Image (cartoon, rainbow, N blue to C red; front, side):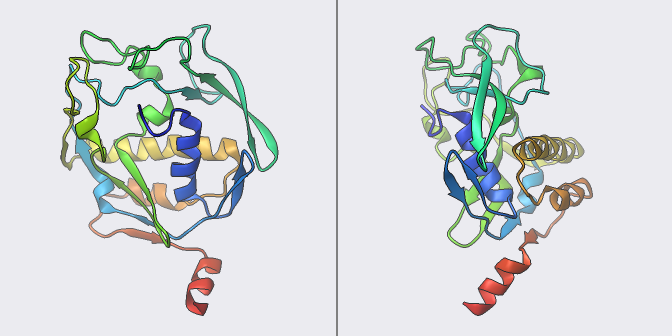
Length: 223
């Protein structure tokens, strides 16, 4: 099973924690921003072979109210607390079945049956976030424990591979970052995406994008 069974936790503690400029609270927990580096490796492409499904275990499926979602009875309104405000999401906890894989994974082909309406946390892969002690990093690379992922043939190891940069991969990165911005805006997060998206759209780049607030810079100088 994945580290984050609740996908909103992954979005907040990983993605939002990396791109936020100002601190915020989620379910009473304080997230403090750090300097952010966006790696030029974020523009790389990757393969997604059929008959795998390794990255599709059973975890909660989350949608913004404005996003198209599957019309099934298990997707229900769900509220989360952000900065002491209650925000509406739509949520399928997938607690009504015990299959290792997501309910929407086709067990014959290894393909997603709702791919055009896939949740954001599925769509955002393989963009990876690394939360460091002093700096966070945004890049694109393979799953850290992809060798352990269970495929539809009950063998271990995801079949995807990282490939080179293409015009399509650059466009996909920009699209995913824009969807991340929609989520961050819905949550009221003060973020770096207004700086990151234009940089990504003018890519690919060979040098990283480094982002730091004045407050973080002053704190670093004092230290």
